[in-house]
Structure formats: C-alpha cells, structure tokens
Length: 266
Image (cartoon, rainbow, N blue to C red; front, top):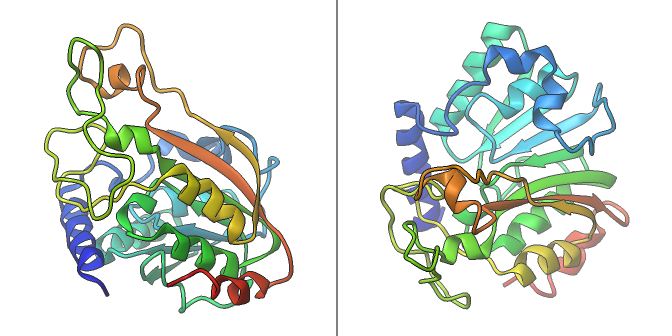
C-alpha cells in the first residue's frame, strides 16, 4: 500500500470514528424508497432486484444498505476498516445481507473477473493518484454490458479557492499538476486530513473510455442556492459545479480490457 493510500486509510478511519460527513448511516426516511434515494436520475430502470452490486469506495453505512434494501446482492469495498464497520452495523440492524471487503479502489484483486452487474462509485477517485488503475479494475470486475455509475469531483472545484474574493471563487491551483493538493481546513468541498489528487477531464472521461466503457450520460447535480450565505457549499456551487455523475456501460468481452490496459498502465 502506497504512502498516500495509507494516509487516506487512517484519515477515513478517524472520520468514521468521529461520525464525520459521509460516515453516517442512511436515515430512516430513505429506506421508504431506497432505490429512489440513490438513483435520482432513474438510470437504473426502476429495479435492481437480484443484480450483483459493487459499492466501490462506498463505506459509511448508506450506499450498501440502500442498495441491499432495494434488492441488490451487495458487496461494499472501502480502504477504511472503520467505515466498513458502519456498513456491517447498519446491515445487522436492518436485517440486510452485505459483504464487506477492505481494499483500495485501484486494487480489486480480491474480487473475481466479471463478478458484478452494477458498480456504484460515489465521489472518491480524488483519493488515488492514478485514476486509470481504478477504471481498469472496474472494467475487470464488471460483466460485459454492465453499468458503472460514478461520481467525481470536478477539476475546477479542486482548483478553486475555498473562500470567495470580490470576483467569485478564483482558481489558485494549476490544472496540470502532479502530487496531492495542499492541505485544507474549513472547506465544504474537500475533506480535511485526507490527501486529494486533481484528475483532469482527459483522465476522467478519456480514461474511462480507454478502459472499455461507453459513456451514456453525464449530469451535474445542482447544489446552488441563490440565497445561500457567502462561502457556504450552496453558494460556492453557484459558481463551480462540485462534482459530476456519469453513467457508463462496459463494452466487449470480460477480460478484454484487462489485456489492453497493459499497453498504457505504468
């Protein structure tokens, strides 16, 4: 495990222990219609009953529980054992069957080839240095024709300042950069204590296509509120889209992309 991976594992363990943002179980009201709670765009067609679902880098007691309550056969992978402990606790309390696997999103060697019909990936690719490895691993474990639903912080959001100037939220980080972003405190769009990496659009969209996916749709969930107080998440979202949600489909035969990926992965 790289130093960045170990750093983020420890950071998310601490966040889970504190009950920080994204480390809290799904609320009761979301279980009234669990699929609607996690699929606001309707990309999943109204039912996932019986589908093999991988909730990738999605520990914390929300994603796995809701997809299982919607009828999916759920495995949740996370680098943080403490985040996964929340998933197991919620599953036990609600009588749900959820398999947990402690692993990094860019090394899914514990999972079998073409073993999932659906991969759900909340915002988290910012925590790995090389997003291409993530897409190659997802392509390997996803069956041909399967769906990959993922969310990614936009490069601009990671470039922009936390606090606005008189001109709005100005860009202070270069687009073409290497290494993690500088530490941050008091940010509503980043997680303090973690190491985050900016991935360019070429790496996100192009990388997904080169890994063997066809992008079928992309949305920018709207979090802007015109009356929001200056400096808040809702105010900043009026200037900068915080993340995108992508619907992609796995093409080709299982294993085909894994062989091709050897050409471009370091």
